[in-house]
Length: 249
Image 1 (cartoon, rainbow, N blue to C red):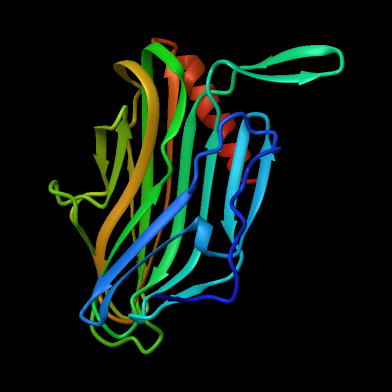
Image 2: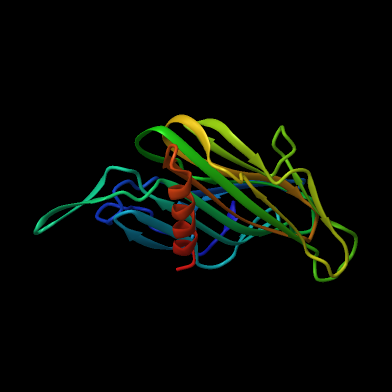
């Protein structure tokens, strides 16, 4: 059960984006007060849709009945290699590289709380051979009272906080170990794949954060995951820069 005043209408028919995953964003939280989950379908959110670009942003914080709070969330999905826009003068091809960008901020309430934050799966026309780049950053912030130590601990089997998936299989685990911070200090870890990795054939991607956060503290994260035709590393780096620029709209 979630305290919320209205539902976002998550019907994408008629929007410009060629493929519209539903839901775009989902989150679950668990502590000794209970388990809760919700998706972008259950919350007030704003949508920006273009032929090769889809963005959903949470409009206002949402509180779970177990005391946890989703402070903010944004997901950006860009399209595949064969999307088209048809207009009065004919069809125009768009070749934006497939990508998923996922960002969030949560607070734990008065109990240690586990969170799992997931993107929709972005399906696209098969790219083979393909390369990929994943990057993520996670920040832990202590509660305003400043008692104890704020800690964010990864819940994946690897001990990491972020995972990226290609065709449903793990591509990369990032943001290793436990992030801790004491009074007045914010702890941040950035983790970048660093290079483009050959991954063979790719037709879908998704990403996920999973971690446990200490009581009353706040964790936030950003990530990007992009697929490009291999080998094209130089072109891919240029695309990654373009993708980052688009995220700042």
